[in-house]
Image (cartoon, rainbow, N blue to C red; front, side):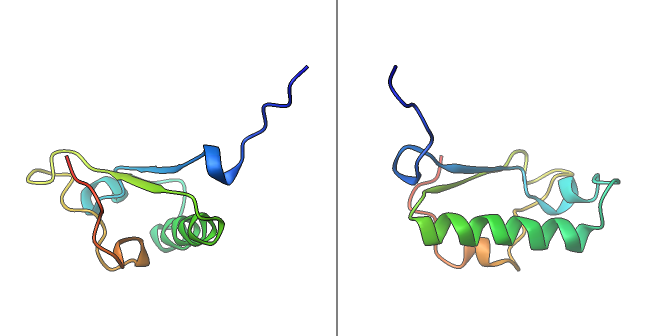
Length: 81
């Protein structure tokens, strides 16, 4: 049987809707803790050479823009849609 484990070469980190308004809806954890954990995941992905995919939706409405004060956006996205 073939070993089908995840590797950095075959994986990506997907961060969904890490936007200002959306983050205000998180009630089970402190917002700063969520930001720290997210940054830790993004740093680990960068160290491993994994692509990081950021999604956002309805930025002009309640969800607002992506959290820009983080190191997640330290480089310009290579692609946008």
